[in-house]
Image 1 (spheres, rainbow, N blue to C red):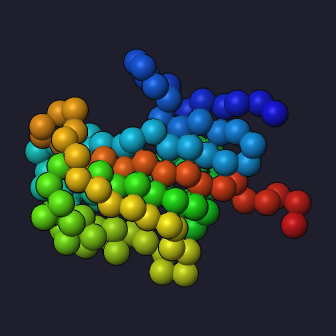
Image 2: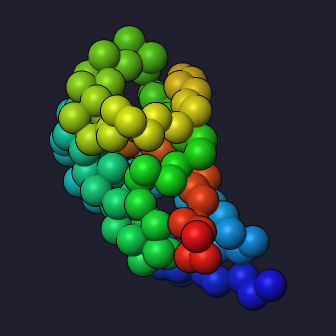
Amino acid sequence: MPITRLAEEGRLSGAVVHGGLVWLAGQVADDASLDVEGQTADILGQIDALLAEAGTDKRHLLSVTVVLADIAEAPAMNRAWDRWLDPKAKPARMTIEARLVDPAWRVEITGVAALPDRHG
């Protein structure tokens, strides 16, 4: 099976496709001046674009990990998440607090999605 690497830059690929799955690298906001809700919305838009490039979409997300610089900001992150989420296709999700590489980043999101079955 081939391995496809999408949005390659510097040290990483934005996503890697293999064996019917799409692995997303940790995505951070393009505009770090936004609050956590704005950063989350920005990141979710990036995830939509990466999944589309891979041939899938958010309805096929299997699992997601959300990393917050401050867990107290979870309600703000969840507001953006809830607006974006397809309520009929909720992935497994974990939210944790950790220090992020750039102190301006408030949230980082990674996940794994399935490619849709093209044969059935």
